Length: 148
Image (cartoon, rainbow, N blue to C red):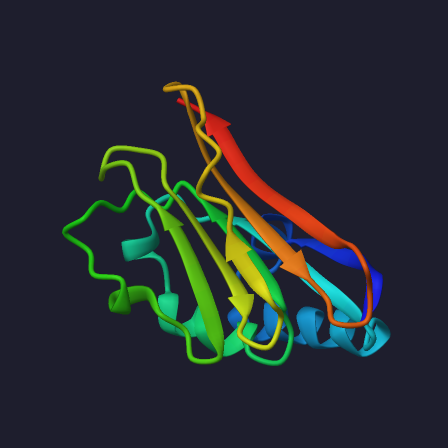
C-alpha cells in the first residue's frame, strides 16, 4: 500500500448524505480511486451506543482501513466485544457516559499496536497507535486526542 494515506471525514459525509447507502457509495468511490492507498476515516459519534453501529460495520468492510472515532461516551459497562468488527483490531480509551472516549479500528492485516507507555496529562484523552508496513523501514504514528 502507498505510504500516503487518504483521509476521509465521515462527519462531513454523514451530514451531507444522511442515507447510509449514499455514504457507502461515496466510500466505495473513494476506495476505487485510491486502491493502493490506506484509507483513514474519522467520525465523531456523539454516543457510539446510540449510533447505527451495524450499518457502520457494513460500510467499513472493504472501504476503510483505519477508523478513528471520538466522543464514544463509553465506559466499562460496555464490553469490548459489543463494538467489535470482524477483520479489525480495536483500541479503546473510555471515559464515561457523559463525554469523551476514543475508539480506533485498524484492519487486522495492517500491523498495529497501541503505544501504552505514553502518559497524557489528566485533561487530555488520547491513544497513540503505531502502524508498520512490511515493505517500508518506517511506520506511522496515529493519535487521537482531545481536551476535556
